[in-house]
Image (cartoon, rainbow, N blue to C red; front, side, top):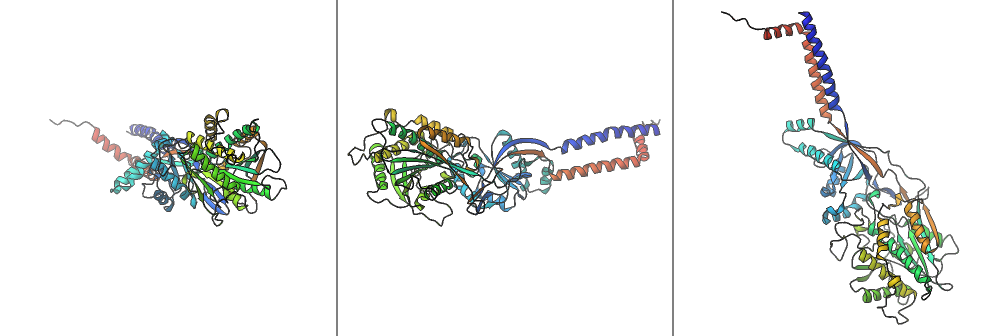
Length: 569
C-alpha cells in the first residue's frame, strides 16, 4: 500500500508544481507591447517666468480620463476628445503624466477641433505644470492601447462592485515608461541671426531694412513646423533677396538710391531675442553700421501665406512726407491698381512695455526709435495661428481668412506669391521714386524674367517645413542655419552671423533638454491581480499540504470510493 502511495505522491508533485510554476511565470510576465516616440511640452524660462512642463520622467500605469481615479496614473487623451476641462481634471486629481495622441494626418480632423486646440495651446503653456506632458502621433498599436485602456477605465463606473473587481483583476493594463533622464537646463545655448546687404548707387544713402524671424513655436518644440508663422515670411524675404539682387545688378535699372539690409532673426518666438541683441551690437557697440546712419524704415514680414487681407501694423502712425508714409501710400497704390481683390489697411497699436512679451517684431525697433512696421495677413498679434503645432504645410482648412475659414491648404502658394509680388512692387516704387516720376500704379516691374517664381517659393517653403524649427532645436551648427547662410551668400554681400547667449547671472531665457523621448508601453496585470493570484496559489499549496499530511485518510477514502462493489445475491 505504501509503495502505491509513494508513487501517487511522486506523480502529484512531479506534475503539479512545475505546472503551477509555469502558470505563475506566464501570467506575471510583463510584455513590451509597443515602443513609440513622444514629444514633450515646452519647457523654458523667459525673463524670470517659468513655462510649460517641468518634468520628463514617466513610469506609471495608463488610464483614460473616463476613469474615476487618476491619481499617479498616466492619463491618455485623443485630440478628437481633448478639452481643457478634461486636461484640468487630470491635473487636479494629481495625475502622474498626460499623453495627448495626435493624428498622423491633421487633414483628417474637423476644422473646428483643430481651431479649438490652437486656441488652447497658449492656455496649456500659460502656467507651470509639474507633471510630464507628452504628445504622440497615432498609429494602429497606440490606438489599440488607447482603446483597451479606455474600456478598462470606463468599466470602473459599473454599478456592481463585484463586476468591477472581476474586470479589474482579469483585464490587461499598460505601464507607460520613458527611456530618457530628467530634464535639465541647457548651458551656453546660442541663438543665431543672419544679415546681408545690397549696396545702393551713391554715398550716404538711406537704408531700408527687411526682417523676418525664422524660428517656429508651438506647445511641443519637436512638432513646431511654423509653415505660415513664419516660414512664409522667411520665404518671401529670401525671394526678395533674389529679385533685388538681380534688379540692383541689372544694367537698365542699376542699383537704387537706397541700401537694402536683410536680416533673418533667431529667437523671434522668445520676445525677439536675436533682434534685440542685433540692435544692441549695431547701435551700442560699434561705430560703423547701416543702422546708425539714415534708416528710412524697417519692414518686418510675419505670417503672409494666406488670406485676402493685408495689415500694416505700426506703433506710431507715419508723418506725411516721411519715407514711412511713402511706403504706406505705395502699398495702397499697388494693391488698388494691381491686386484689387486684396483688402489693405493699417493697424495702430502702441508699444506696451508692461507686457511680458512684445506683440510684433517691429516693436523691438520702435523701442530704439527706428521707424518700423510689420506686414501680416493677421489683424491681431493674439491670433492662435502664430504659436501652434497645427501650423503645418497644409491642413484641412485655412484657419485665417476674411472672417471665416475656407477650405484649402494652410499656406496658399498663390496668395503667398501674390503677397511677395505686392511687397516687391511696393519696394521698387519706393526705391526708384516712381510715383514722383509720374509712373502709373499699373506698371509692373517684376515681370517675365524678373517675375516672382512660385516654384521657388514652394521649394523654400517645403524645405523650411521639412523639419521643426523651434529655437531650442536650432543651434549655431544647425543645417537650417547653414543653408540660410548659404542662400544669403548667393545673392547678398557681407553676410554675417550674430550670436545671442543668455547672461549666466541673470538669463533672459533658459532652454531645457529631453524634449523628445522614446516611450514603452508594457502590457501588465493590475496590482489586484497579483493579490488574487497569490491567494489562489496559497490556497492551492494549503490544500496540497493538508492532503499530504492526511494522506492515509485520503487514500483510504479514495480506495473505498474507487473499489468495485461486491454484488450480493
